[in-house]
Structure formats: structure tokens, C-alpha cells
Image (cartoon, rainbow, N blue to C red; front, side):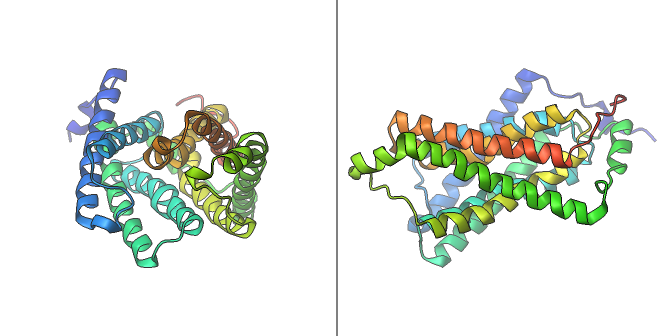
Length: 295
């Protein structure tokens, strides 16, 4: 039986850029509508300035997924589900919990914003897959996907790798955050009271990152285990994904416009090392030991 879904070619670079911009525009429209609907409950106002930032953010999210999406040996439905899980765990859930602990708001407001964010991420996941993914994986890719196996040592080893990867984010967060604090942000907090910044208590920071790290790792494990490329390639792709989705995009959306350039550069550099290196650790713990030469 003929399957016309095989006729759609993989999009080129220009198409990926254009379609990712389309994702960004729809992402902005969805956020504008939700912000207008929620009013004062929303964390961001429905303004044209925010709309432009949302367009940029949605475009970056789509571009960070595109090189991974084209290599995933799954059906389109499974791709939507996994992308949605990644976006929800890292964004509205992980960052939402962190934001609530750092800057408390009424719990009902946090829950409503989280639910809205998860719904919008479902739309984004669907759009990314619909616009960028080939309609059906190649047979060899499907065969590789069906051969996904539990790492050597069984589920106990899988759980241990998950703990190590989650703790790696915790370590990177405090190591690079501490360096940034000593070199830049400590003096900035002390010398710029007008910005109203304060360092949360150590207990709050510990709790927030102990929650956020496992959520980030849990989200990307299925992708890492499914990719049949070298560990170095997986590390690069996942590192960039975690930096963009879990750091750069939300930072630009919420904080970048409020702070001076020096603070932004220092903070984004810190986040880059934290998130990218976490992706490297996940890739080496869960990725294939050797790339499948036939794929």
C-alpha cells in the first residue's frame, strides 16, 4: 500500500528558519491571548513589546529542537508527546517551582500560570513537529528505536545514572553560580539597591535546584536514549537544548530587559555552563557507547 507520508522531504536550513519563526509568531499570539485573559494573574502583560520577545523565544525553542527532531526515530505523535514533556518539565513546572520559591506569589496564581504554560507548550510541541519533522521515520531509524534497551546493569543502574545526572546540575549550579557571585553579582547586589535584588536563602536555593535538576534530566533522557549518533554530537545537541529552553529563552522573556548588559552577560554565561554541562553528563550516562554506523 502506498504511503504518501514518505513523500515529504526533510526541510532545509531556510525552511527551518522560516517555520521556526512561524512557531514563534503563534507562540506569541497564544501568550498574548492568555495574558489578556488572566489579567493581573499573568506573570507577563499582553503588550507589543512582550509579543516581540515571545516571537523571539518561540523561534529559539523551535530552532533548538530542530536538529534533534530530524534525527529522532519515532512517529510524529510520540515526538509531540516527548517534546511536550521536555518543554513542560523544564519550563512551567521546573522554572515555575523555582520562581515560586525565589519570589513567592499566591499559590493559586502559580498553579494557574503553570497550567496555562503547560497548555501553551503542548501547542508549541505540536507546531514544531508538524512544521519541521518528516512525516514518517525511515525504516532503519525505526529499527534502531525498537532496539532501545535499558543500560547495562538494568534498572538499578538506570536509577543510579539518573541520580548522578541530577546531582551534576546541582553541582554545576553552585560551582558556576558561586564563581559568578564572587566575581560579579555580589558586588552588583550591594552597589545597586535600586534593582531590588537579594540573594535567596541557601535553604531555598538548595530546595529549588534539587527539584529542578531531576526535572531537566528526566525530560531529556528519552531523547538521549533514542538518538543514534555519537555521544559527542548528542552532548552538543542536548547541551544547547537545555541552555536555550531552560535558560536563555526564559531569561530573555522575563529578566533581560530589566537588567544592565554586564549583569545579563554574566548571568547567561553562568547558565550556559550549568545547563550545557548537565547535557554533556546526561549524554555520556544515557547515550549509546558507539554510534550506529548504519544510521
